[in-house]
Image (cartoon, rainbow, N blue to C red; front, side, top):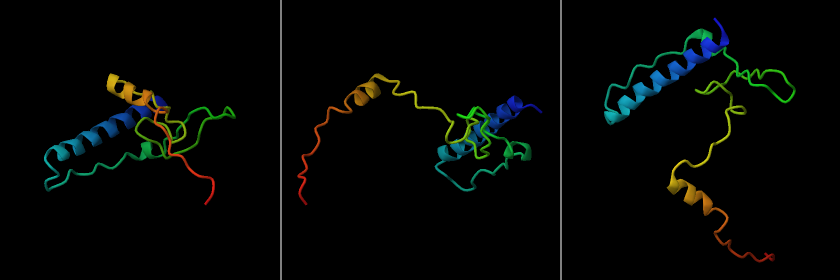
Amino acid sequence: MSTQEQRKRLKVYYKTSSARFAEWRERDYQYPPPEYIPMPDDLKSLECGAKTRAGTPCKQKAIYANGRCKWHGGCSTGAKTDEGKKRSAMNGFCPKKKRSHTS
């Protein structure tokens, strides 16, 4: 099985798992909790594979739902809504408290 197919299966696994727990959340966490589905063995050994600065693929095995490790997961894309853009634009305009340099 190719790495691309494994990454697709990994995303499907995380999506179904989060859907099961979202359903439980909608039920106000009533008993019984959803049954935990273990990750398939061939997906446990999946590596990040992102290109490192040295040009070699990353060998990290602790990967997130997006298929990458914590170093190669991607940057934030920023605010999307108008309200969020206004809030982020206000960063830097808040006056700082004056501190004395003596203690």
